[in-house]
Image 1 (cartoon, helix red, strand yellow):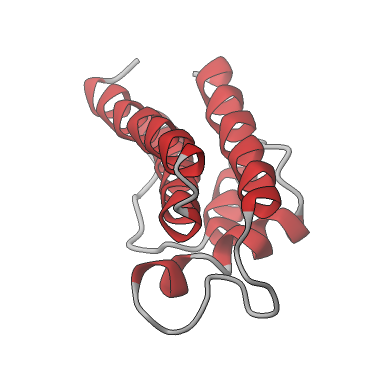
Image 2 (cartoon, rainbow, N blue to C red; image 1 turned 135 degrees about the horizontal axis):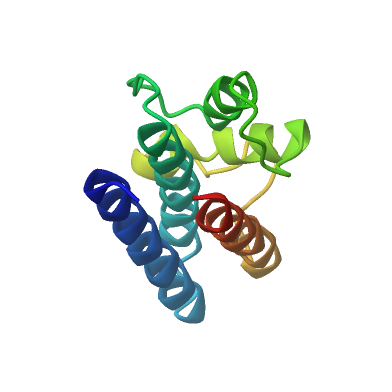
Length: 127
């Protein structure tokens, strides 16, 4: 595995650990922000490992499609990508709550955290 790939996965792993801790303390917005970052960095690690051009995008759907075009597959559904993509801006800036029609809560965070765990584990198993 490339050194740069290892670094991206280390950061993704740290985001996952942070999300877990933030959930324990009921800091839901920050939990979701770290979930999004874990998934984004995991997908970008796969791009780096496979020598794909790293785009400056935060869109999980776009990253998933770029990887799929090179036969690098994740089990993230389109709906799951849309959900994670809906987190990025509102979790970083005070534009309202993270989700357009819901207030972030423990259940939403638990579901998001499971997506992050699944994604990072899938990527690690493919590299």
